[in-house]
Amino acid sequence: MKHRIPRSPFATRLSGSARETEIRIRNIFQGPKKRPPVPMMLLAALLILSCGWLVSCQPEEDGPSGSSSGASSSGPSSSPVKEEILLELLYQSAAEEHAFEDSVPVQKELMATLERDGRTLGAAAFTDKFGTSLCVGVMDDRSETLTAPAFHMAWQGSVPHVVTFDRDGTSCLLYTNNGAYQGYTYGEAGLIQFDGTGITWVWPVEGDIQEEDSQARAGYDAYWEDHLALLSPGGVEIFTENKDYGPYAGSPVQWSPESSQQFYPAPEDDLPIGTLWNVRNWLEEFTRDSRNPWYASNTSALWRILSLTAGQSQAHPVTGNVLQEYQLLAVDNYGTDYFSALIRISEDSGQVTQVVDWIQGTWEEVSACGYPLRDAETVSALPLPDSQPLELMFCSGAGAWGTLLTLNPDGSFDGTYHDSDMGVSGEGFPNGTVYLCTFRGRFGDIKKLDDSTYAMTLQELNITTPHAVGEEWIEDGVRYVSSEAYGLNGGTEFLLYTPEAPISDLSQAFLTWFSGPYDRSALAEDSSLGHYGLYNKSMGYGFFS
Image (cartoon, rainbow, N blue to C red; front, side, top):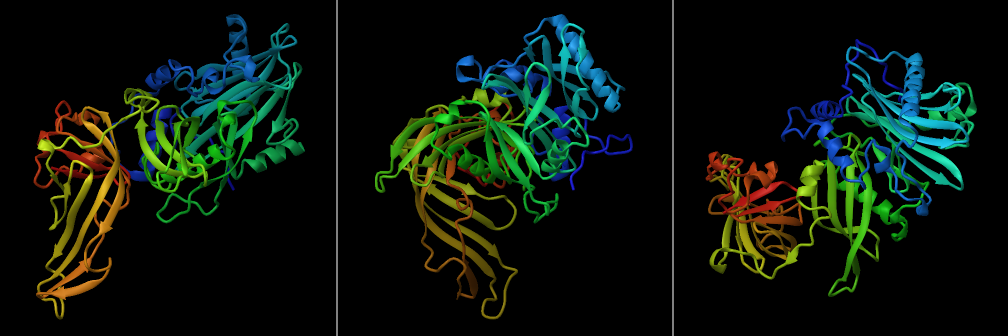
């Protein structure tokens, strides 16, 4: 069973700092970091606040603005004096329930308020070394006292998010409070109604869960034993837990999408039924072992979808199937890492069939590359030197293996892969073993992203080795094994970089392959690549001229 982590000085702690928590979690999964740390949470928060449409712990970013949609933005609207009094009352109520770690001052933030009939509902966040807790309570404006003890939620390493809105004339507050510990994520969420006198829960249970022995409280606690909720446009997406999960190799994922709950209008309501749900399932698979904020494998429920916006549509020239483009934007629980993707969904199946482009990083990094992702210029030919074929090599410099690819300006290519192992010999093949593949194919949908970067899709890949993959034959005392086209297999989205591409703009996964015959000392942060490069985005492989 899943329980709140005890707040003990003898327990391994995760800091209240969102960035430190995230780094600790990443280290648990993967050991030393493989990329430079992202900016501090404070900088990220300032960036988020500068973009009014983004979701963060600040309520005005979480909810849609404007009363015409039926949902309202939720920044504190009462007077500064009232806010200060309410915040202190909530803190005192929370402190009565458990002791905050106060070796450093506890950070206090009033996240949202709702005023009605002389009373004010407040949601506040309190951050100590263990994490950020959420406290919700109602103050009588005249007596400046709480009408009842506040409801307090505290999880190890947690970060709360809130949205306020009106539904059928009733003021509502939706909250999530999720945390992480030792490779596990967990949390709770709820929808509260405020009628001007008190608060009641309407989801995931109905009633007053503040009564410890009530049926509503028992149902609430039982529900969050094996569920997790992430805010999404208009409500929440709900995940169910796999009890066999563990942070070890071969484990199933911890969380699987179960359902969604819509509480207030959102622009995504106009999308075809099931679109947002299908994108959520695609996002889980696409970011499970990479492209996630932990930079780890076998992750789940780490990206919170902020928006999904429809773009252009196009029909397949042969099948006639219509593909609809969508722009996806998501953020991690801590508001420090963002993921954006331009995807295409088949109108026939409703499934994501193509990833045109994607980017992950801080908001500063994502916005620097253009959000929404820029409409790339379609080109008919690659900018190869003298419009002649270009030879590119994929190798590590260790071992006698490599893939040589000859790329033509129109995107067509051919090549060979070989791996010689002269130490693996036997009867009939005393001269060792060679793994071999010859291939040809074509890149299409070539688009110019900037002056030094071209995106293209692997549309054809044909193995031309005169033997099926895996088949063996002996020739001149050598055993040959027919193999895959190593470096091209496992991905369809590629980037071609020209020699002018700035090193600072390139993926570390891609640059890792700049070895063997290449001089890695030339890869200074302020320099350019100096070679043509071909990047298999899904697999992280790099070819160089």
